[in-house]
Image (cartoon, rainbow, N blue to C red; front, side, top):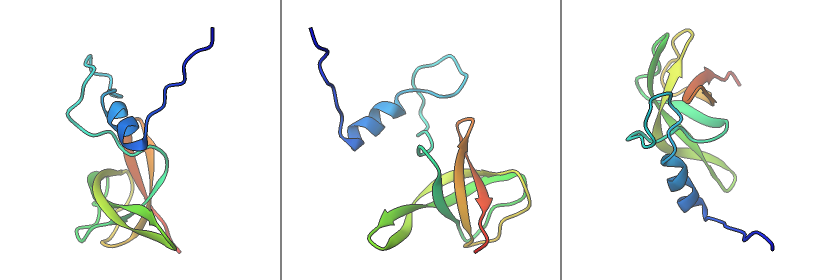
Length: 104
């Protein structure tokens, strides 16, 4: 007997993944949306990111010919302050998106 293939579209798959809590708390559901999966581009907002703190960053969304600003996500900065409107790479570490400034 063969196993049945079960597949989801991206929206349903993301919704299902949001039901899985990646924190060490003893709960299955979390009210917070998990960070996007994988490494992402982002841009600091007009407030920038203070040193050794967290703040909001615009995530990069792929469009024809490059990227555009998408929704805001919470990002953590463990180093020196990152000024406003600077390109960052967002890497998920321990369930948090960590921002690293990119110099081009």
